[in-house]
Image: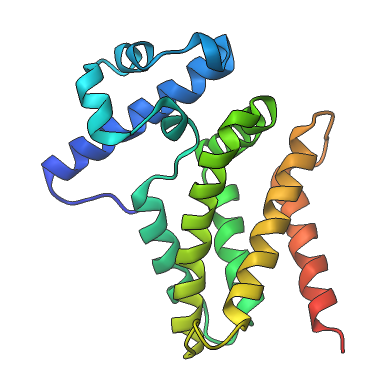
Length: 199
């Protein structure tokens, strides 16, 4: 993930990540109801007031998506080889995020696990996923040279790939899997691409 160049932005990003990390880890350890904003702020070594400069609630801190992630997803999709089909390009971008950085993969898995354990997190989780999908649809439409408001294809492609990613993460996260997560995602994306390529 690209890092901001100026010191102030880097400090803000570090604080955001520290709060989100603390929120997820404390929730996994203690349970959702047992964790407060004060707990999260203390674990990140900031004040509760600072917490609310970044998040509106502990739920958002647990399952929200970092704004820089959206920028990176858009940039990565635009940089994919032009000869790739749209579905291959979107799948490659998501697969790269899940396989090149162990901490990113762990965040996604923990987020999925917490949403499954605590259904009250689902609305915030769905809002975050909608932000990701909206970014990918807009960027894919730009890559394809179409208007996403009038051409359904970018939304269909992104919806299919992101739904498959969520399903595969949930399946893999249920435990007992010896297959690496990256391999499971590659197989799932390849199967989807093959099916959509059929007449």
